[in-house]
Image (cartoon, rainbow, N blue to C red; front, side, top):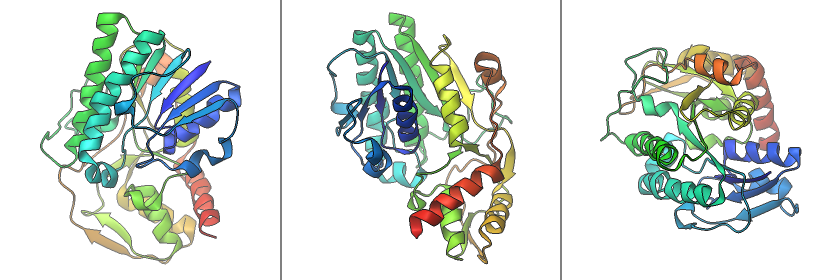
Length: 310
């Protein structure tokens, strides 16, 4: 296949690049590198199967040659990043999504949208199923991401209904793994990087809020499965095992053999109190469920951070 991956220098995007290049496919990356890192794809630069276009997807209206599949993963994904780049986040999920859908339509390519568990906001339903419409404060600082992804889902389904475009939508829950950056504000890279230095771990609120963490190889496995099935509605992807933030901190400290203390901070506006995917649909449609437990995945991530910091 010839696969176009937007945001291909980002965390999940770069792992998808690895997957399709290993398969022997041709890969085109479009990434303006405002949050992606060229080091994430450095091992592939110069390969004849790879084309890297450093450009904002909001400005890309044409790509030469045939395309079989578009994976639209371009978007600042951490709270620090999308609050630093609020307009860019809204633009990439509106103009950028429109441009990629138009390219998919003209090339007769399948289009996969990377949506997010954040479409559920601070949920009043637990665990979250795909038929839950969410509880989003559209004026909160987080809304640029939440509402941007919700709009992108609506636009993608509109293309399916009007043009019969082949589409898929994945609602990605908290995912972690190698190539995350310690300064992006997400909890696992923050905890690991600080624990390895024996620095205080920042805990927002009292740490009783919950999250569910999916290791990157499980997530890539699920994403690559969904492009092979004909299912045009959203599918939750994540690990349904739920942890409080305090529990996560204790596990990270133990695995890092860290002496870190806790630093309690005010809870951010509209921060979700609970987050846990119902993955019944993924089991039904994809015959998929995660296989990597949190401690198993964390050991890999901790080792990666150790090597990176040596």
